[in-house]
Length: 82
Image 1 (cartoon, rainbow, N blue to C red):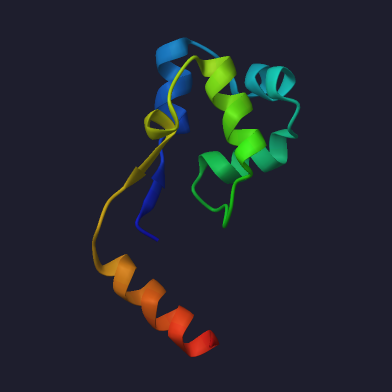
Image 2 (tube, rainbow, N blue to C red; image 1 turned 180 degrees about the vertical axis):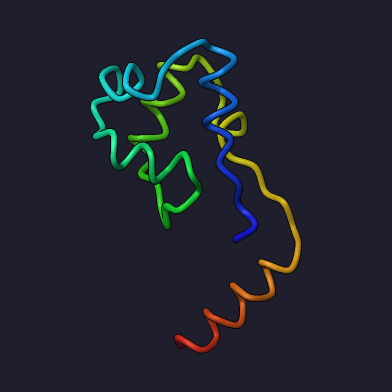
């Protein structure tokens, strides 16, 4: 997928642990870890809102779009599913 999660960079810049962010946001460590590693398929706006609130950042500071070959593979998978 061409969407990249840069949560680890934000945590490093804020000198905050993943566990501390979990406590502040109210999301499990397992789910936040899935998001941080880029394995999540979706993120709720309420979760994104809480992350931005606690990290004092914008959604674009956590998520980025990097076009490439992954886009083509995603498009083929979506077309096959229809």
